[in-house]
Length: 392
Ligand SMILES: C[S@@+](CC[C@H](N)C(=O)[O-])C[C@H]1O[C@@H](n2cnc3c(N)ncnc32)[C@H](O)[C@@H]1O
Image 1: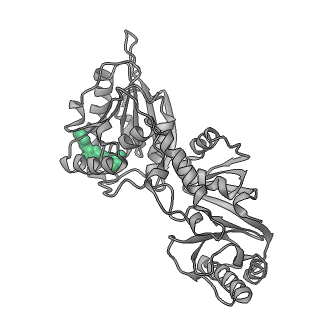
Image 2: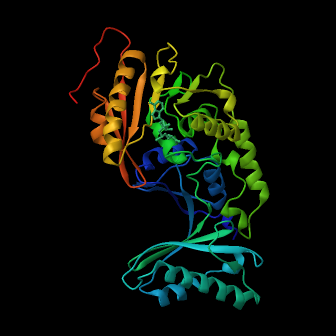
Image 3: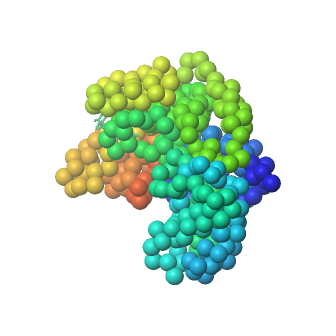
């Protein structure tokens, strides 16, 4: 039985609050999710489907393919179940594997202990059946086995991704407080941008949001920028399956004549970093970069455009006070200079957000490294309709 053509449960994981956007991407790829939860989406599929998911998804972290779910009360029972799995047919004898886990079981006080039990079962099984065993260690560059163990229910997965998918491979220089690429992509999916109208990103930092916008508009998927995945290190892996999916990615890239993406930042270093990152992503020519205060950013006079800010949040008091003026100026700029646009401000500081002085139409919830964040949406009317102000 070749796992690449056997149907099983697939769990695609993501950062907290991204699953609605991940679900949307999975549906667009032609799959039917059977369950959506806070940090992931479940579907049915083959290992071959995991290749497509890994190469295409912008909002995902890992693509897990279930091998078996079973009862285990303690580490000894876990080991006894795991040694019955035909690991010698899953992992190449001369390969390399590592273990990751998500464990909450009363008998286990240290996740690493559970990982060692999984590793021992795999190594002992392979040694017994073939006389040798694949190497193992902490690196995620080879095959990865993932244990999900809650109380007495354990599930063992092939993590088909290895290194996280939430980084999209083009950002070689991170800059100051960069957004995770999967989060940036999800926030863009949450906006009303039509991928044709102007997209303006002042305070662009290392360029993540503008680059993700350019990638999305032109159909460039993360798989174009990455050449190693954990599924490539499984015994039954067939390079032809990957090449077919990779070629499909190349066919999905489209030209968008007149695409107008503008990215600015007050820091020259940030713009230089953005240009390098955009160059690696192959979209430098699609983004108009310049160094300036956000209020000097050129706003093309077209209906339907989107302007997206990701300002600093200021977690220290002095910094926060200084930022109050910046947030107020952003509100004034949106109201006076961006008529006919949808304005977005992504921030983790809800007090500072009040200084913007405009009433958001939507407050979309996100998380970034455990900070409760909002993407605030402002519809900036073009005509005589008065922008609703709120008291700061
Ligand atoms: C939180 S970072 C943006 C991070 C970005 N989203 C990324 O992924 O790299 C905020 C950026 O705002 C810039 N900035 C701060 N004040 C500014 C101002 N008045 N005008 C323009 N840019 C400003 C900073 O230089 C910094 O790069």
